[in-house]
Image (cartoon, rainbow, N blue to C red; front, side):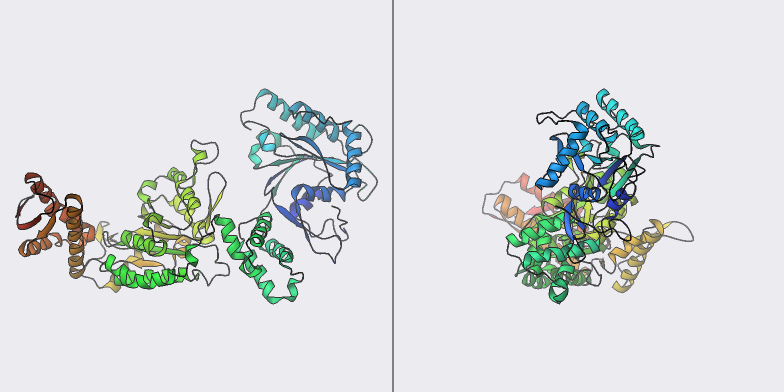
Length: 629
């Protein structure tokens, strides 16, 4: 491939900035360390002003830039394949490069095994040429794999890098006739995953070695690439087709976080699945998530949510306001309108909810109900108890340990689970108990819908529903006495409870944690739960008692009945402390009914299929006795 790039008004106009930086400093730096987005394709201008831009891989990009400065060849070395000559395609260019390489290195041995000794010999020949003025570059690919550990070098590795450091200072610039007749170095270009993959002392205080980061593509690059890729769909002039232009812009926005090479792969995937240009965002989702089936696009989901307006209140009792608001946010998620007011919202989570209110009022139960409603399976519900993440280092459990630490290979509990199944309801219970630094990890999830784990892999949350629960605002500090006092009570109206709890949540994130940006990500998705009222408590009691009777029938094949007086007494005992919520009713039932029932069933064996009736109940202190008939 050959590109005759015009240089009027500056060299390599329109080329990636990192290439222009390398090209402009060839006269002062003998070695370069390139890190970052090395495996991408890069936009370069066409052969003339009338030709469209082109996408080149990094090695072709480097070669085309060096060629315009009078370089005759580029040698590429990696620890697996050894030495290769670039370019290797066009016969004429390949012959010219082979001739130049032979002048520098002599006749290359086709069976030469990769070794540090051979690499040292080649680097010397290129950096300090003795056979006439030959401009060449030497690229060390996969340089991160040369040393076992950059901070714990073996003797041979240490000697090699010492040699390279000295070579950077003793390299000889080369002068040749052509577009840049002034002396330029024959650069040695290291390609590494991270700058720290080479010994730190190699570059410390060494002005002859320049470190350059290759960035990921920005929106403008993705838009131009989308227009180039539109040719795969038979559209050669996107500017004249408004619909195609909008589709390309949507493709570019949806590809946020992807490389240009990934956009090429998405286009190939779309062509394979006969996806139209306008439907490329669906192909992006498939590429990101690695799954073809999308529960959010199922036709019956709309009906399930509508049916949920009757079924969820039966499951989450006594919370009409919370259930209604939650279902409204869920409908928004089903329609794909979450964050629709933002210019780019396609990568954000499908839904974000912040449940606040008294304990035992149904926050966790509502999260399970949503999971069952959307995905038809409560196994898609993933819960993290944030009280286990009160220490800063506990955040490694979510995303995995950094490289070099124990457990790095295992990944994180959160990232692994979402990578395995991105269609989930993820519950972060009692979020206020997490360490503040761990909360920072949620900023990226809520804003960009993605998170990078300890292994460097990106996990996407765009198809997940995130639910945070909190008991913030139940108690506050009295400004006069400094003591903790109750902030809300069952006697207050719902509007007052809602106002006080939202104020407490806001104060916690802005004043205590100094994280107002995290509060802004929750927005108006804060759902307040009310105290359990007497009517709701009676319903919860009936439901939980029915569960006990059903368990007895399933486990022992007995029909359990409770007499009217016993039922009334038991309900009074179990619903006397409503501030403990539905969980308190269940605990009271266990103490006042399940425990004495188990004792009675143990004492008297009943034949399977018989009917057992609780005829009396009495309590003396903490001991409860039942009479069975």
